[in-house]
Structure formats: C-alpha cells, structure tokens
Length: 277
Length: 363
Image (cartoon, rainbow over all chains, first blue to last red; front, side, top):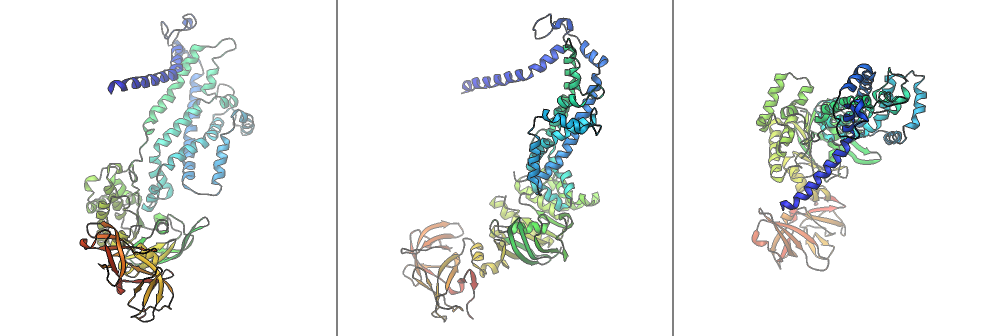
C-alpha cells in the first residue's frame, strides 16, 4: 500500500518542483546577471553562477543613475494607486453586492466594457484628454489613469468578497444601533481584510510594472517610473545588462515587502463561525 | 417595553405583492408568534417592523410612534436572527456589548450589564471566545444575550431555533419562554414550526399567502380554526378533512353525506341549506376507534407509526373511492396493522367549513 503511493507522490512533487523551477528561473537569471562582473558576462559562456561576484552594478545604479528617483516615483504612483483603487473598489463593490438601484446592470456592463479594449487603443485619446489638464508628465496624471483602469476589476473582486459575507451581519449591527456606514466600517470591512489585501496587492503590482502609459505620458527623467527607467539602460549601441538587472532586482524588493506585509490577511476563513457552521 | 401597531401594511417587490394588507395590534409585554408556511410573508413582516425592509403601504408604530421612516437603529428593537449573525471578529463579550458601545454607555456600566446577561444565559465561562469556537446552542445564547443587554422596546425573533437539533430546540424553547416571563418584553417571534408557535405564544398570528388567516390564543386556533388553512396548519398530525354535502335541518337528523356514499351524523344542526357542499374536519386524536361492525364509518388500519407517547394510524375506508384518514391513539393494543375498525365522529369535536370558512352550529 505504502510503496504503491510512493511513486505517484514522488511524481507529483517532481512536477511541482519542475514548475517552480520554470517559474523562478528568470528571477534567478536576473539575480545572476546582476552580480556578474561585466568582463565575465560574455567571456564565461553560459554558467549557472559566475566564477566571482561583484556588487558594483548595484553601487552604480544607486549612486550614479537616476534609479533612486524612478524608484521613488514608482512607489508614489503604485502606492497611491493601490490605496485609492482599494478605497473606491471597497465602496463600489459593497454597493454592487448589497444595493438594488436603477441602472445597476448598465453600470456593470459599462465597467465590463472598459476591460475589453486593448490599452494601446486608448493611449492617444487619453494623452489628448490629459494635455489641457496639464496632467501629462506628472505623477498625479499617471495615478489617475492607473486608478481609472484598475477600479472596474478591483470592484468586481471586492464585490465577490462582500457577496461571501452574510447580509445578516450588517443588519444585526444596524439593529444594534449602527448606521449603515458604521456597520460597513466596523463589521463588514474587518471581515473583508483578505479581500482588501488581495486587491491592494493586485493593484500595486499592476501599477508597479506598468510600462505603456508610463512611457507615453511621461517624458524626461523627473517623473519617470522605474519600468521606463529600466529602458534607459538600453543605449543606441549597447545594453548595460549588469546595471539593468541590478535595477530589476532592486525593483523586486518593494513588491516582495508589500506581499510579506499583507500575506497574513490573504488567508481566508475569517468569517468562519459568523453564521451557522 | 412597548406596544406595536400594524395597520394596512402592504409589501410588494417590484410588481409582486407579498403582503396584501396586514392589521395587527400587539399589546405591551405580549408574546406574539407569526406562523405560516415558507413564503407566507411572516419574515417580511418582521423585517418591516425591524426596519430592514421598506413599507410599500400602511403604517407601523412602536410605542405609539410611527416608525415607517425611522432607521433600524432608531427603532430601539432587538432582533435574533436565524443565522445568529454573530460578529466573527469579536469575542462573546464584544458581541454582547457592541450595541452598548455604539450608544457610548460608560465602560463599567457595560461590564455590569454584560456580566449580568451572561450569567442569566450561562455564558460566563465563554466570554473570551470567538463565535467560531462555540457550539450551535452557545451561539444561539450569545445572540439572545446580545438582544437582552439593551433592554429594547421589543424583541424580534426570526426563526431563531431552526438551525438547532431537536433536543436543543426544545431546551432553548423553554429558555426563551422563561426569559420572556422574567423580562416581560414585547416579543414577536416568527416560525414555521407550529409546536413552537403553540408552546410559546400568548397569541398566534397564522399567516398564509400574505394574509393573516386567524389571530388568537394557541388553544383558540386549535379548538376553533377559522378556516381550512388554519385547521390544517395547526396540530400534528394535521386535521382530517372530508368533503360532502350537508343534509337535515334539525339536530337529530343533521348529517354529512360524503362524496363517496356513507353519511356521518353531525348531532347538531347548522345554518345551512340542504345540499350545501361542506368540508368536515376532525383531528386525528378525536376520531373514536371501536371494533369493526359498530355504528361508525368502516375503515382499515393500513399503517401504524408508533411515537412512543401514542400511535399514529393511517386509515383507509373500504370501497373503490376510498378516503385516507389519520388517527391517533394512546391505546397501543388497538393499533394493529390491517385491523378492521369502525370510526366514530363525536359531534362536539367536528369542524364544519363552507368555502374554506368555519361554520358554527345553529344555537
């Protein structure tokens, strides 16, 4: 019996390992190239790890490039996008989940519609709209665009979390003496923390890695975000792979930290025991 | 504590009417049970009193004040939900004190009230637990505790016991009744379980299809159901109903000729003309069983269901168009399957209905 189950288990584990290796290999390669000295980059051939390591690329990126500014810009844009989108999506998701109102399904349809177009199609009209508002080449403008694009999906995401929370809970709170908003804030929101964490994480990473609009709406290094900044390592005649990869590794750090921060809310099951279980 | 008045209340969802005009006065301190099958509108009515549903038409008043446009929080009522609706992220003490905290009651006062309520419900050792660490019965108690800490004008119960097993339900039923005796609070209790309705209520409101069918004490509904719906809904096993035509204008000859032939003497005259189609109701426990060949309606025991306390009998009358009846007897010896019996219909136990409505004998 035991022996019989050993083989499938081993195969199962191997398959998982293979998948993880496949998924993480690019990240590994990023790290590897970032610590490889320039003179070894092309001379050593394909090796899993360079014969000696260097942190020069990191030092250069941090001291002599505009990367710290890109980094800061990205943090501002992604952080505020995530915060604004999550706040909006929480309230709109709650409304979609709990209220019946006229044109509800029209609004849902319109929100879905916004998700249907390839973003490239929208670059020109958005540029045209933002120019008279003086929002091109500004972090606020970029944040506005990211918020607009992320709110529909985030709303649906939050709605599904609210749908999972029994209506009885806020009704009980309202009878206990809370206004609807207070019931939302004190009873429903704490139970939606996993949903809020997921939405924050999703929107933050989406904004963090967005390139197209950042490239189109921002000119010059002053307001560039780091995906655009990464392109500055590509010059006309060469690509500075070492520095580019070092910047990439640095760019991973906030995303990782962010997920570390919210991961404890990503566990489901907070609502267990609320109603009949 | 307060009286509750409901007058001409209607409710429609979009174009679909759910309640067709409900009038009801509930006295201060009364325990009223709304009972009826699923979808009869009883929960909707309760939720309208609570302020969780809009009132399409009509007025609801609590303690003499019209509350139609008041938010639930301003109606000063407490509600126990079928799902208990405990706040999962708060412990028992937190759940019970939430309403007091919202009202900014002083901390030491809250502690006193919550402790007293917890003691009353036997929850003292569980105060630090989260709802998920409680059993069904304990959750039910916390839900009750949450309702009583505030001393509201009225308690509303929405099928509070239907998620519990039979044993626990019986126990909690007793506790709710005792609580009501202690607190004397106006209570409205919704259930589809007629035993709960009978045992708890000062007055029962039987509802069907969005209309009140009868309002009265439990025994009034049991002894003198106003119509066929109430007759069938109250009592278990349900009342037997036979259809036929009325005949005879004096007590000694008044009888019901059943659709399939035999006649049942009624023993009393009713203000009906001969040939009026009527329904005759008799409760299973009131059917008199005697050995076959007697004066009554001949029948055969087809099936017996012993309940321990007594025995439920499934009876059929012989012949091609036989009718099925249910009997209930405490005499185990009389209850044998496929035994032939004769059924007696004691006149004082009969209920006559014409077009679904009760008809009283002519005095």
